[in-house]
Length: 325
Ligand code: UT7
Image (cartoon, rainbow, N blue to C red; front, top):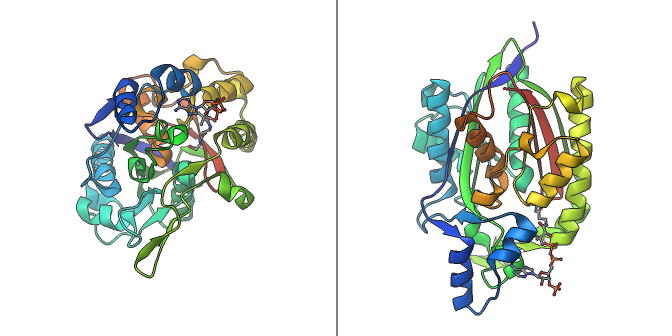
């Protein structure tokens, strides 16, 4: 009998400090940076975001999301036999945020590692966990997306600092006789490294280069719209399903205009798209599991429904996962 993987619990966590556009506009104004609620809402759909306190790391946000997902799955930390954390804002250069999270959770002993695919990180991590479960290498995986992007923002650059927020989302993925994950499709094209990156690195005890986020927004936008449609059609074809079979599109939450464009190309009305970008901003690898958990906990997204998860981000990376909840 074929072995599948299935999501049995979801969880998420947002740090308590919430900044509306008005709050951020006022803070940036004190630095002499001009922006407005109108510009941010019109160009991105973002109305608010959460920022973590200075002493709170990705592993702390991920821990809260993981506990909530475990509770939803009715499992204890010690039941978990694999931890994958998708993050581009790790607690340390090394060890991985997954190891730090594992220790805080009390799930010591199982394999734990990070996946670094920026905003596509969660679909990458989910695909790896699914493959490890299908192969028998794991049976109960915790897959987390967690970010503190506020740490890598340049608050003198209005073209990027208004876009991102902090948060975490998690799922428990368990071995199952029925699917579960139906198909996935991952890609990267390293020739676009420069359009979305944090170019700094640590060398000789110093930070070399600029350790803040740089983005050519228009280049990312154009690439994103094209590749997301392709990835969506690829997972549908692999699973033998059609656009009309999708109950919910749960895309990476970067910009409402990208989400609207993807939905239109898939002939999905916006009421089949889970939207959290307005309240969370872009939380990179955390955005899809945050949106998924939001959908589940608000009762919109129900067990047995077919979900299309898709992400796109720095690398350039992109991908999609089609699954039955
Ligand atoms: O998470 C990974 C994936 N990331 C994404 O998907 C992001 C993709 N890109 C985008 O979402 C959009 O390109 C942005 C939201 C980043 C920018 O929107 P845009 O419609 O492409 O704006 P733009 O870059 O063309 O800028 C238009 C104008 C410029 O002024 P001029 O040159 O027309 O006078 C900018 O200087 O808007 C100006 N501008 C701002 N004005 C007020 C840029 N940022 C701001 C700002 N407030 N915060």
